[in-house]
Image 1 (cartoon, rainbow, N blue to C red):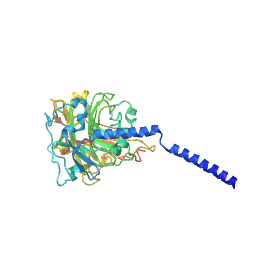
Image 2: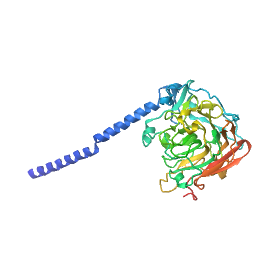
Image 3: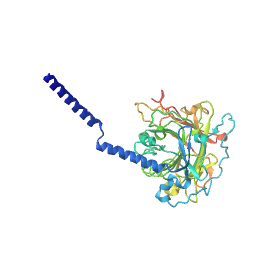
Image 4: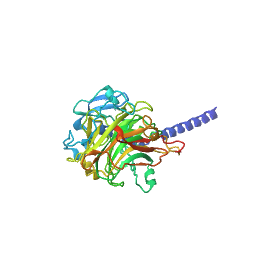
Length: 422
């Protein structure tokens, strides 16, 4: 009996030791607890920096919260060089020859398309003297590779049509189908962009359609102003099509960001929210919707302005943000871009545009129409000698055309992976 009790006691002691070891292994170390606490604190501080006190908040049907922020409290004014900045409420100059467009077309005619608005408008509007800002949430920051990387593009994502080495273009995993001009000095660009909701294969991939205003070389000093629509699960946490802007003055290294996620772009408009869902979007062989975007430089102040549609002047990028673009742009690009992560060793099936090739035409393939540039004399005009570029035309392609009320246009995009794009 004594032997059994002794044996049982030893077994119990052994189990206790195992339990203690398990608890010690499972419990977070002091270093890991500190690291986690630091991350939480960084997230809280960043949310406080990005989400300014709201005058009013609107819950959008898509789950977004749109905060109406006082004009003077927006993130731009966190920039040290904007502390005493006087907000320019209207541009000193508007390019000549802007097309007269209706915000909403009533009945669709063959070969025509409707304009769009934003989904949050269904539940309210922001009052005068405020601007709408999409609220950043904790999950948005935690999806990013780091707090510092949140809201930023990765280095070297610009399409370089004239690069002598194609590997320089594809090594970043980004692919494009674009039209471009680079023969003169440019003070802006315009286009009407067909809006779709392309399918994204991996959460870390995106699909966008935009205008690029570029200055400088394609090295470390590239200046870029960008505007368009995008689907980016990593940035927004869903697959909705969203209006976006971007800027950088050093080739995406340290400066710039999407939308209002850093200090830079100064918004003056209380009706359109950067990063908010565009509504509705086009359907295959059905209703087509598009957005019109115009970016131009104010020759007096040197600021770069952004207009959405015919009625919404959204705001401006102050001239001091840029080096080359403080003078003019040397290249304009229009078109689509996707991330091809090749996660399973094959080309991504992330779609560009509608996910259909240009040859399918209207109602099936995505388009840019009424492509224009603002020349060195500040005139809005149709560009000459438009060139095109795509890394792999079997995956995503581009096809230009001209004529009728579409002016200069092109169809672009594709499905990504297919029988000819393995």
